[in-house]
Amino acid sequence: MSAHDTHGSGPLDLNLLRTFLAVHRLGSFTAAARQLGLSQSTVTTQIRALENRLGRELFERRAQGVTPLPHADELAARLSAPLDQLAGITGEEPGSTVAPVHLAGPAEFMSVTGVRVLAPLVAQGVRLRVVIGLTEPLLEELRAGRHDLVVATRRPRGRTLHAELLADEEFVLVAAPVWAERLKGQEQELPTALEDLPLIAYAEDLPIARRYWRHVFDRRLHAQAAITVPDLRSVLTALTAGAGWSVLPSYLCRTELASGTLQLLHQPEDPPINTAYLVQRPGSAANPHVTLVREHLLAAAKTW
Image (cartoon, rainbow, N blue to C red):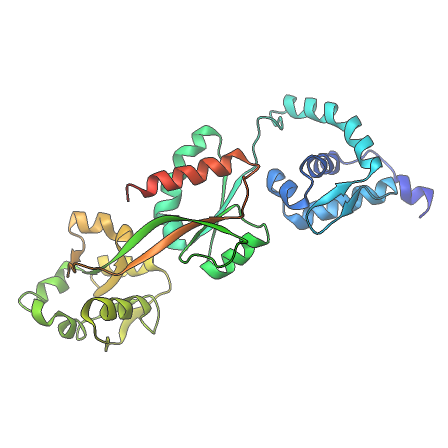
């Protein structure tokens, strides 16, 4: 590498130095990316750019994080005070600016309950980065360090993740009032009567409704959906518009049931439930706001 390549030209980009200092202090590209609100690939690119500019490696890459080399320690010692002073002037003092909390979970839960419950924490300085998705891929991403917390619909196996019981969600059989009215006097034959009315379902194989039929009525559901849409919020919208009947988690339609926009068709003694878990990697989180979000979710779940 030539001297020109080693030293480059012009002043160093402050962003490279800020990223370097975060990696040095946290000992991890992933943790630095979370603190800075950047992707891990951006942090990697910036560190490589700085190393190319200085003409030497700064970190030894290991399976678990990175270890600073002697020149990195020297550079960090020179940069810490001036960059912290600059951050204080710009209102981004590291001691007062906490990294965002990366939270992931099912679309319906996050949209209807999760964001609403956590919104008051914004006044305490909490920043949230919410991702929605299915449990299996989200748990894999959690293992890879892409999330801080995941709301999962099953308990993960093994010891690589720590799961806590969040809440049990009850499934309820509901319909628009116009269809509930047509079912009056048919309570004894409700399963058969419903099979002749429009069913609004999450998927073609009717996973939620079929489970309800097996658990509550101890029989198979013989029906075809009038509408399928892979988002329970849209199923709820169709029901409130008068499209038919369905099975939904109670938290999703609690307001509509209270207002009469939807009607409960059946109240079994033992309704089917889904258990939700709050999952994170083992060990205490370095970000105090992760702990705050976790505790807030667990406390709120007790009132659901």
